[in-house]
Length: 149
Image 1 (tube, rainbow, N blue to C red):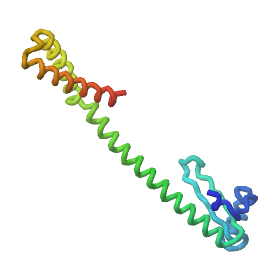
Image 2 (image 1 turned 45 degrees about the horizontal axis):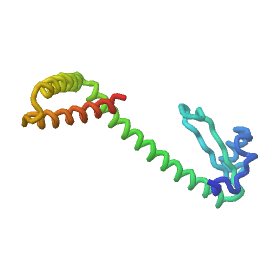
Image 3 (image 1 turned 90 degrees about the vertical axis):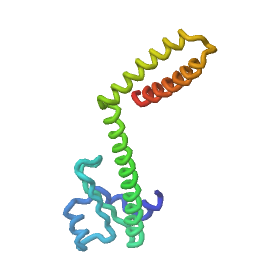
């Protein structure tokens, strides 16, 4: 956001030596400095970034804004993790031998019901039942096809 960048001394971001920044963080030099440490396996490979604000209010605003962004990122990561767990469960059920056998049985049953449907007369009460069975198999195979894509 624009508010995050107001009053930040961009010349001090990433250009000061680590000794100077360590002194700043210990209260020996610059004040109103924020240190950002990234994770080693992340996008920024564990780099440390420093932001220096022109006053304490702006520094606190930066810290508060970053805290809000971190919470939002954590919520998104948890949502992805939850979705991935559900996806893994569905994948394990779908890949299981019993489920694959059930799909095979559905294919054979659909084949047999189509053969019987062609052999009986259209006025037969069994024709309605076989038509409903055909709709069931169509829905089941469509769902399986969508899942398998």
